[in-house]
Image (cartoon, rainbow, N blue to C red; front, top):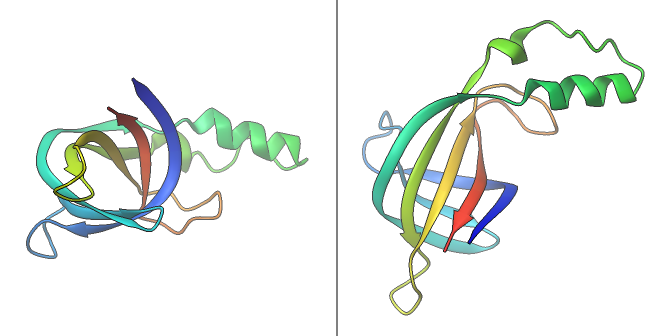
Length: 114
């Protein structure tokens, strides 16, 4: 079963500070250790959500176009909260566009498959 989220998570890199691969992440007060990286890709942001929100609040819906061109990195990892718990598959996203109450380069948990 796949569940969609959008929760902010704190991600620690797997190795060197320049290594982008997640090594662990903190979600809802629990530390998950990444056991393996299953995939890594880039995808376009859902720019239309930001445009619709701006229009709803009476702001200029066209924006500056940066969200349209922005891509985010997605890492699919197998991780678990400990030895006594099972592992799951988590899609973690590093979003380079500031906004929606987050600073730039924030991490989100997008999907969980168990």
